Length: 500
Ligand code: NAP
Image (cartoon, rainbow, N blue to C red; front, side, top):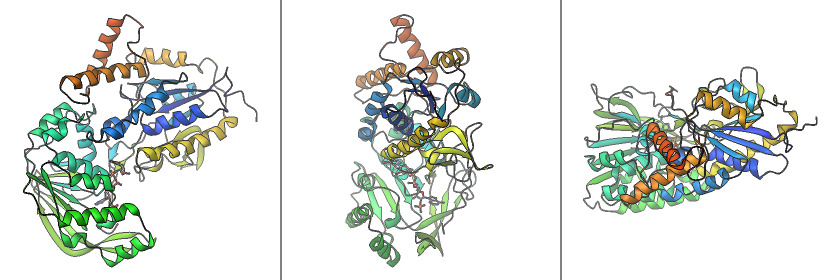
């Protein structure tokens, strides 16, 4: 089949829903290919771009955040536009995206938390780590949450990097946090925190932990927190030993060395203690109305039929008195209106990034997925680059099969006319650059990297004032748009218990 789609006078029009890393890497891959002339419109429901780089990466990991410089370069490409403060399914509906774009990429990430599925999970004082992370990172949807930091003892369930981030932020001193871009209200709340003990609870052993070594090491470098490990829980069992020989992994070797170092240290009598516990699974969170304790079962390890090392519950129980729980066992994707969804896995069903409908097992033409909504919530920021490239390869292969758009709809002007009617306060990438400058200036005043905006109305007010100062239609600094995922609580029962 021959097509004129992708010629200069009939560009391949692509909508990217979500302005996080996977969306930007998809845009980059499309802009770098030379077979087709493309026009990329990226949408985000927040006025600010960068998804989890802004709303997820820990505030004391400023170096990681500098990846946004790459995204800024992508956004500066003349074929790229950002439309922020535009929610998929609200301001523009699924059918309208199809009407205006040859191809749609869903890059919305995983916007809610995996549930433990144990009694007591909803008691006061039991929080999703994902909410805490979004709160301390100034996400507008979470800024009004209230975490009771007047309490002393915290359990963080899970052994991934989010659990490490949460433990580290809870254990940080005011000085450690002040030099970051943590939300100003979170800095204030955490500076008055009474927390003394933080228990990190891993259901498998240290050799199976999901955290990476730099994050583990950071726990041993806290200004005012000691790391405490039970020597028997960090000793390698025969199954782990055999697995480490059969599947050598430098990260595991490094983690074991770091843990051995921690175990050899004498506590320094610091104000806070981070207790690293392994081989324990929560069975129940206890308390009348508020969290009072967590009941744990001690696990052993066994080899699963697929060769993986799994937790195996024993009959040994333990009740740990605690005041708060942060459930940190992973993120889960949320369905988008009109788009197929696999609720069990929390992803958009896809083959090589091509969305398919599980009911018919047919591909949905012109619709694609990248990032966490494609593959689940795993991997680091860089993982998204090859992942997005793979989806773009599928998209490019499909171009000859695409149906033409109505020429009236196949323009940015027609999309902007719709937006002006439905969501006149949509924002651009240039608007983001204005907000960025404001945040940095606010930070300079108090010797911090930036002081973030967390309120959408405030952001829009700042932009309005900036436009007024510069006169109508005068972008204040260079302009571009952004998109962030919708946080719709979704209940995804996690039946994984101690033996999973
Ligand atoms: P994760 O890496 O998948 O870790 C989830 C943890 O929860 C695992 O330890 C898992 O144990 C445990 N878990 C799952 N179900 C459980 C249950 N029912 N009971 C007890 N424990 C349970 O998820 P994450 O920490 O949310 O991180 C998501 C992704 O973002 C990861 O790829 C992570 O590396 C990345 N990330 C990276 C950074 C960084 O680079 N600094 C920071 C934050 C996040 P099992 O292993 O036994 O399943």
